[in-house]
Length: 276
Ligand code: 15L
Image 1 (spheres, rainbow, N blue to C red):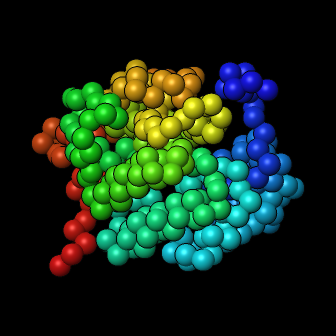
Image 2 (image 1 turned 180 degrees about the vertical axis):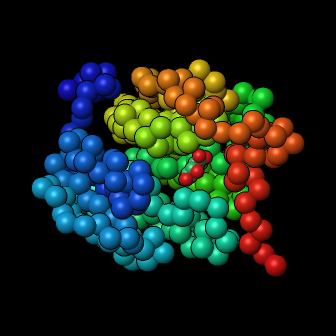
């Protein structure tokens, strides 16, 4: 198969690793990724349930450095959703998202894994305002320790690409749920089908390099310009617009002095404090 024709085909991997497989988006992607590979290795520290056909269960804390080496052994590519996914005290984030990410990339380097799809987050740029349209070339403005840890992940993965050629797609996922939960999510919503499209495009595009892409559906209101990531070939097919009437009716009028209304990160910009 030529590199060109591989671009949009349902490329089959021998073994894919999905971390965070028991989490919200891990549960969504687990069956969908299984159809793209012979063996899906699934990992988490939470309960993974029964192994389905073609699955290998390998629970592993991201902090376990030697365990992470075993986790990445024999793997063709990784979809890394593992770690802390909300704002939390720094020490929790440090273990999973900073030390854990270092362990993952060191394991990838030593085990010869050449491509990683990393669940970054829109909270890397959460302190841009909701009246700004930004793209991935603009400076980070994290809205908490969680956003800072994802910014670290984007830089760490760039370093592993520049020095070792390990390709990474940093997915700055917006809000991936069955439907938007509030007005903010009319801009940030990513449908599950578009999430799958984004992950599959990131896994299969012939030349990924180190790329940063916002994970959002084709929403009418949008704060993010994905032009710098067009080479990935992600073309969202869904839109939050059909949920606008019900979403707006459910929510009280917005208080424009509320930082959660002003800034793209929403309530994340005023979560905490966790220090005394
Ligand atoms: C995230 O990064 C979180 O993982 C998720 O729980 C959502 O809150 C999302 O961002 C969001 O910004 O809506």
